[in-house]
Length: 412
Image (cartoon, rainbow, N blue to C red):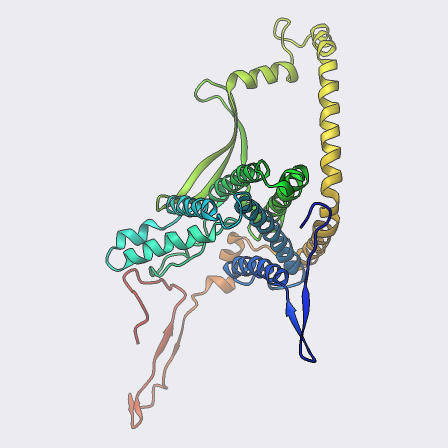
């Protein structure tokens, strides 16, 4: 890379005597490494969904969106780390190594807080080694993007799998830390004494941070609309609270998540507007009751006349920003999201014709289900109780089957 051009070599041809030898350039290995890393993270995520992303054409689109999200985030993060190391001069990699070590320790600490890692330490004995392995492995897995690598050997009978938990807070916090680190590292690199970096500050900033931003947008689209549990991820509640007399407005979400090894439902406040600010907002935009408790047209007209210029300016700014975002996001929507929405709409139309809802009351009133689901297989009564081959076989099946509480395995 020079000031005037960027040169990318893929294959070099070397002559050894009369035989040509083809040598692949390092660029190919870098490209394949990035693609394989992105595909590994995507495949692991699909494995945790137990085949939900392998069923049909729509699932293939879902996986492509997830793969592109991971790919864009890794590309932006990787080049920022390279520029940061490059800015200190040839052979001086220790600042990057110090930063990566600090990041691994930070991600390991966050993994301990927002996972089931505490159970490894509580068990004691040789599992303490697994505890550090669990933390360090996830610290390494979160260098580029958010990940939660399951390494759980603690198989507790009659318990649900530990992976079906909410990771909203965990992902938001780790993604926020990563994008903050990217901004700081890129700022240090672009303000160094390297000529190539200083002369292309705007280009590198827009491209690299743009890659990461596009990856986060695709991630939000996947989890909000394409994830198999999308209807549970953002099942939020908006309400105005008057119980404590504050009259504040809040948007909350019930999240089943880990905090310091404890898994339980927690009430997360996504947005909060204090009472005074919310009352001011209602004063300007709510119903006016100034004149003896009734709406006054004169007062409303006066307030509307005073607020009209401000409303026009704010609406114009909002329209311009919305138009810019639409233009920037339109190619991504047309190429990646629109086909997925069309396929999803077709699938929902086909599934609605074959889905039939059976209520619990109808099931109890049905004569078929009201009979006891039991039967008895035995030898005829006129035969002796024993035969030369062995005793008679009696099998009894009942619908009232419960799993034993103390049973820890299959007994033969």
